[in-house]
Length: 314
Ligand code: SF4
Ligand SMILES: [Zn+2]
Image 1 (cartoon, rainbow, N blue to C red):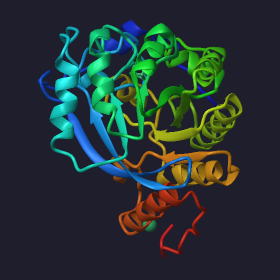
Image 2: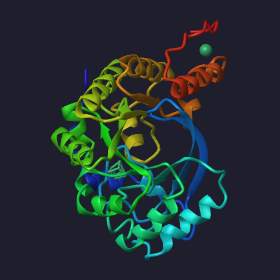
Image 3: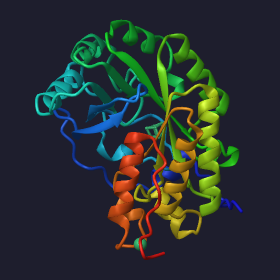
Image 4: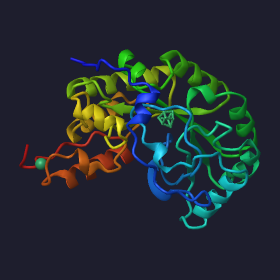
């Protein structure tokens, strides 16, 4: 059964639980790397991901830890293209580009609108570009940016969960109707959508976490998204740790991530990926964690259900 605390998990409470931010340099992105990803055509392509250093997202979601690598003030015009150039000059060639800015790309206080032409020009060497946005920022800025781009555009939106009471308590300030409208808006402009889906947000048992992640994948594909990315929820942002101490949150197990990925791929509605970053923390057994990671990596790439090998452990 879901259980909820007496107090409100609102922005004020969430902020009150935070520790200190990491030091960041606005001249450089706080992360950049290449990896492989399967595209909607089934090809496996090299992807460059750049984690842009910029102002904190104006939303304060309960599970979010992206504020840790943000500036206190909006970054001046010119800084974002410079960060992209910095990363691209150090990364191998790729065909897809992901620009993650710890918030919404179309928030003009995060990515200055004046930087759209230079950013679009830098993205011009790629076949497609992925950026992230809260539904509230999907509007004119999104269209202005799209009109400058030559690569195809995909926008990632955090659907998080379709559990109504949990979604409300995540402080996302987005309804399922908002999500659906956002996907429709993007689709009408020829922009595809990726949904971020949480595995076991707070207030849910392990079984409920799996069930609601699967239901959220169903909802996302019905709404018209092209790709679902399943993110196991982690502690570490203060609020989640406080909820864990109070018995309202526990990180999901590796086995639950396996179940949800199997479900999503089995639907055959579109690519479903498991977020494998820091996967070790979800494993409860040292003997099998590497072989299980390798299976999930292959399932992400090939979108096939692979057998669970007998690990000789439980
Ligand atoms: S909208 Fe996204 S970036 Fe902003 S606080 Fe929520 S999860 Fe974090
Ligand atoms: Zn094991």
